[in-house]
Length: 97
Figure (cartoon, rainbow, N blue to C red):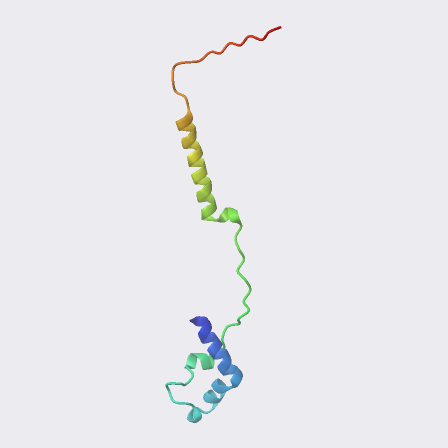
């Protein structure tokens, strides 16, 4: 919506409608189609604004959330796969000479 208002203001400033209406109020158009005072007195912002700098990936909350989820899953897998039994298995091998 803001961009549309800015574009309308830019068109009105380029065509001179806003400057003529501000110079001579008697020649202005009816109130239903007249230029709002905010567009006539304030120029629209520039359309070619520089892009906002992006943050590094390691400053993202999604990155640290994924790291935390992987650490939690790894810890859970370790605890589940651990053998807590008291029975031990001894293997003996004989290698022929």
